[in-house]
Length: 237
Image (cartoon, rainbow, N blue to C red; front, side, top):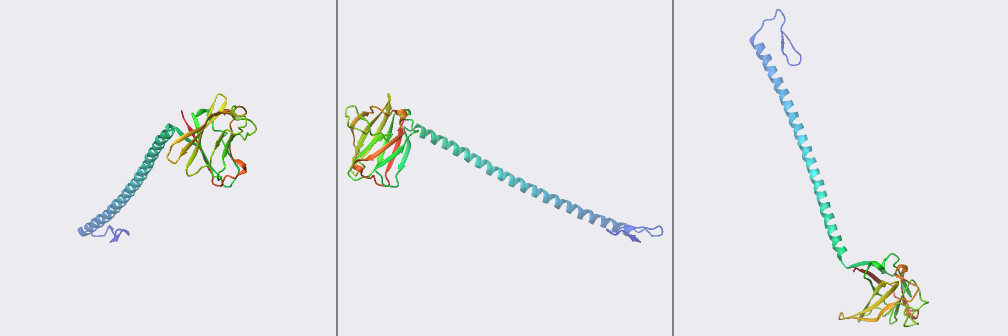
């Protein structure tokens, strides 16, 4: 009796004798083949499902990471906005910080974009060291006119002693009615503040709108030591 090549199923010829066990064996072969096919299909389906589930899990995890990053960025942006609002509400705004790298008789500080009029006053804190010599502050390098109508020899806007262990100096710079005024303040080691010189009005040459440079000059040609610092703050109304 002939058989199929793959599953060995009976192929009867006309003269062959048909027996029950031949049918049973064929059915058993078919059963085993179908079971093997079913198992393979189920295994593949399960593997595909697991792969898809894994990809979905990875995608969900990545999406959650992105969402967390976005939430963190939003929170950080909100915190920065809140911090900026607090900074904006502060009356003091740091406008400049200058540090010298070499000794010099004169230090020039560019304040061309200071916009003096938008502040109640500008506070200048010079941390200069030049021995016992005094320091003069001028505007726009001008030294050939009188800064004080009451004192025709005063060719500077402010005069002060350099920083020492006993006293620190701050200068209030104010602009009003076409003139620049300055009030020199001294703070002693106990925190007491005293004023000298009063408010000094410029008599000509420099207006708040034309102010571009602050000049700090040590008297008698003395050098201001390297590492000098000048801090400038705007004080809002």
